[in-house]
Image (cartoon, rainbow, N blue to C red; front, side, top):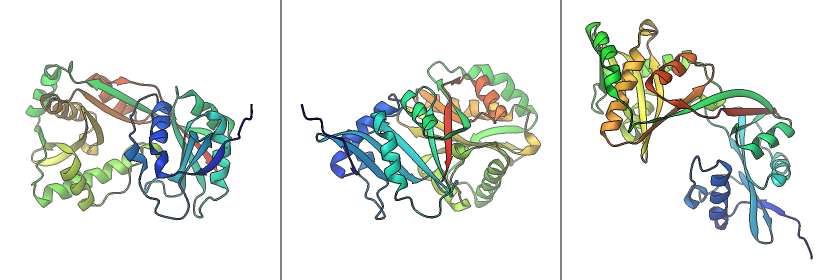
Length: 302
């Protein structure tokens, strides 16, 4: 029997279904990818995704593209499919690597065995660890946090959902708080958000999110944002003003936001962050989030 060697080539639109299946299998169904997620046009002449094809079937894929605005010196490598072809795909990418980047990062969960094995064998360093967590909103009990919220209310703290029509002064205060979080919160490349202007923050909240704030004597001192994704809401952008930390303010605010999500019919809530952010880990544990397998960010200098 004649055995043909795999061909490495750039991704084509016709590969979208096969790549969607390989990537979904690679993340163990943690996310489900559809062909339309892979049919975007390439903005430049260098393909960011390659595939390994054997006998007309796509059996592996690798994407190497800028990691994000928050980490401008890094490329991100994502691999899926037959692990025997990850190294040839990486070498093919590195042969045409763009200028201006000094490192390659890979992100995988610790139970994604083929990716973990590949990154370790390919000389990447296990550089940072992040956690993900989920909460079953169907069993979430807001009554458990009423005593905390009453105590904080008597001290002048009042949580609310921020109106999209809030005055400019509120949006300015919100942006100052957002910047304080970017400055103060421990983070790694995977948990570093892309930079936002004040107008950009306002736009993303109005377009995609529900933002919740705590006011103390009328002043916004805490913020958390929920992004609806199907039956789940994802929590991000969580920050408390330095003068109001370690008082339970964020636990009470997130409980208020999760109560809203439960009332809106969402079944689950997700969140995550770097393992260095112990205060946020404690808040989410109090709220009933269950942590999952750790996410590993691998690094390799170019």
